[in-house]
Image (cartoon, one colour):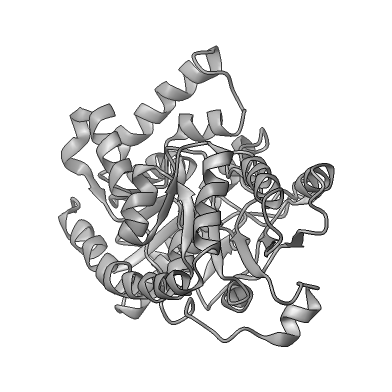
Length: 387
């Protein structure tokens, strides 16, 4: 098939949403399909996936996650670029990522006369609330709720990036429930894999010898739980001195200052952005991985990279996290920094159990989260779409 992917984002920018887009496209290409991505002007081409971009907007430089009032005109540009690309590429299906992509795709679909697949990575209203972009039950909330319902109804099929998310969509939109399918996040097991810790990289980052390393890799925002994580590390630091935290991602400036204010400057290392291709080398420096994500509506794909790299994970107890980690995860009460610190302490206290958990994490990723199985589900969805 010829698949035109709409990515209303600065793809590729080394964050979870982009990893799903890339790895999905890569897996489809490995199955013999042709894939072209249409994205914003920012970001970089990655892994040989063809990308067509909107014209450069010099004043727009945002590559981090989250809403922006610049998005409406960027998406207008995306529509016209996608229309031109579709007339050249002649796709069999429009595969639209994120609500904005599906919004653009809804207007593109009748012009190019191909079906629209909406690849949903969470709730539109939920994301905007998580980012503090609007108030719950305010005017904007009501407007975006109408827009979200319209978007879901326009798609010929919706694939959700987690089973709990698919179930929530079916409850919220029962009129289209039969067209909603779960295609959970997966992981490239060849890229994300256990590696030997590199002494040179360890020293380059100034990590202290003889301590367990707690790693985080992803966007650094409030809804990703960075503040709660640092609060948990403060609690843990008051109890013990046998760990160091390596926090990787961006934009990190706010949390560098917050960590210093908590007295954690010598217990935490911030790296800033880490290239996706280099991430397994950096994750190999860790003994335990964390994801304190506070959103109950979004997927959490970074957990799959942790698992595939053989890292035991500490997370908050949510349906999405339980689907991804199963019995390998260590679960803290949602939003509770003290309980999160407690789960970390349990792992730090048992080196033997940590080794076994690392092995179990990799085995679980191999058994349950390969793209080879996921892409077959996606192909079945494509086959069911109207001509």
